[in-house]
Image (cartoon, rainbow, N blue to C red; front, side):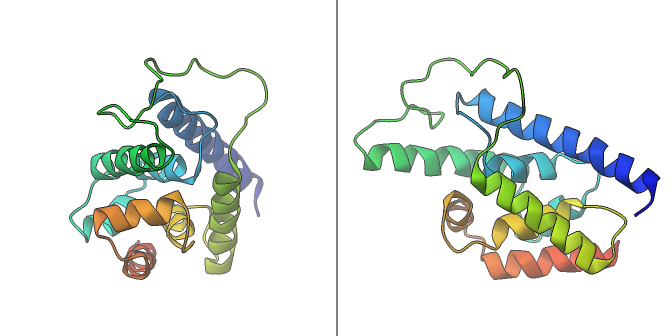
Amino acid sequence: MSLRTKFADMSLMKTLFTAAEQEAARTGEGPPAAEHLLLAALALPDDSGRRALGTFDRTADDVRNAIGAVHADALRSVGVEAGPDGRGSVSTPAPPSRGPYRSTGSLQVAFQRAVELSKRDGASGIRAAHLVIAVAEPEHGTTARVMEHLGVDRAALITAASEALTAG
């Protein structure tokens, strides 16, 4: 891997992780998770992730709304009534975090899987579609429930993201 590629990857990581953290903070959540990484990937200049999701006529806003609905369902399952934005008792966004970057295990696993996929493909770096694939692979968890809520078949999304990678 060239030095230029390493710097590009570090810049991408900063962009992704910052955006994921902002998405989590916007709804008053704790550390960002894989679903927030998905939203960050969909906001990248590389449109491969948006093209993959677009094959199902879904957008980042649809994903954001589905995340809110899934989180609200999870809160209701433990007896907490969520507000219209999917939040429980949190009334304001979380303040920006300080110190070392913190994220959930689901984000870490998804990002590492995206790195593996980009290396396997011989890509010059991680692309948004690699992240979409990595987030769509798990059968269980929030992102799987988000896809179900959207009516998006995970296997079909993985195929669409793979096709977006080969299309350029």
